[in-house]
Length: 238
Ligand SMILES: Nc1nc2c(ncn2[C@@H]2O[C@H](COP(=O)(O)OP(=O)(O)OP(=O)(O)O)[C@@H](O)[C@H]2O)c(=O)[nH]1
Image (cartoon, rainbow, N blue to C red; front, side, top):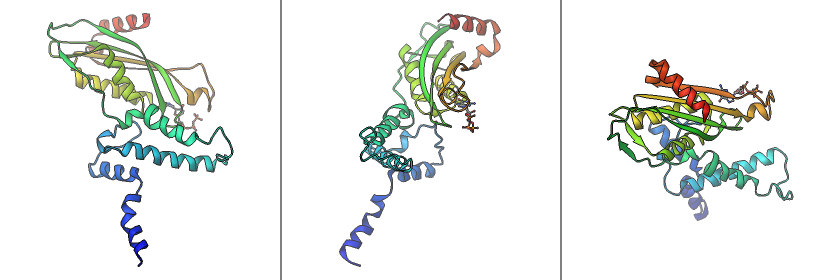
């Protein structure tokens, strides 16, 4: 074995794709890493940049397999880099970064009146085709004296964190509900989402008029039909 071969052998672990290192940590911890899971706690400082480079190189292979001449086509020379950046830093960012900081305030005045936020614009992508999902979200909260209150902007920040992952709408809205439920511990929580799915508009069935609407009702919104009606009627005016 010459010095060059020994050096190459010693370097093998460093040549391992960064995605493999991250995946091994997640598996060792027995955690899930579905498309709509957040894996930020398994990514070490500096690795996100390496992951972006790895995705860029794989996307180059995809363009190669699509028989696109990225060397002479001035429009696609930088496409792999741009798409990798878009996935990691923008549209799927919610998988890779930690939850945004949210200050929780005690409900000092024991407020117990209905509060509605919306429509919050949501942007996501379906996990089946990675096509955009663009829609609106309304959140209703009924606090009690044990609830925490959060700042108005934090509803949008938390929703964005959950939505900027490949999702299906039913699971996305449940993730938003679980997050708010744990943070605020309200008496009742109501969430409605209405969205356009571009996997239906742009391709496939090419139905560009239908939208998907779904709702999650918890606690007092589930038990009290009048409260539910009040939320739905006020929501429809916004
Ligand atoms: N339930 C649910 N389905 C979704 C969502 N987003 C996209 N879909 C659907 O996921 C389905 C995937 O269906 P498949 O039959 O596996 O894939 P496909 O052959 O490409 O389906 P077509 O879209 O009918 O061409 C499609 O019917 C999509 O419309 C979502 O958020 N929730």
